[in-house]
Length: 84
Image (tube, rainbow, N blue to C red; front, side, top):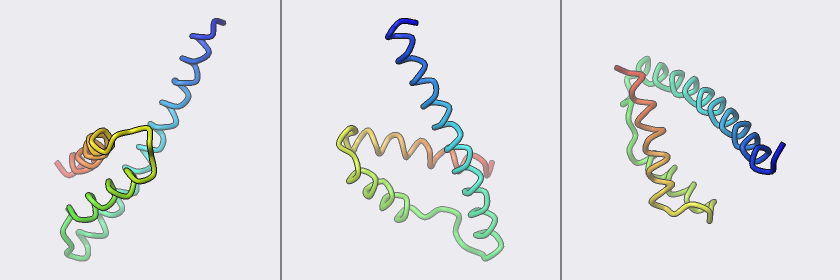
């Protein structure tokens, strides 16, 4: 197996782990939406979403704030798609 194959294998494992975590996150989001519906709360919380992105951006030097914003905005937007 070449070094490139080994590296690609590692990427595949990380991608599978990311997918698994995104699925776990989606399940939790479903629970949160259900709680909010039952308790008459707004499903969206833009302030919390932006605070999350800001907090995460402080924890990395590998992504620019703009890149991290784009990634998390896509994840958050995807969460709202389950409502449709």
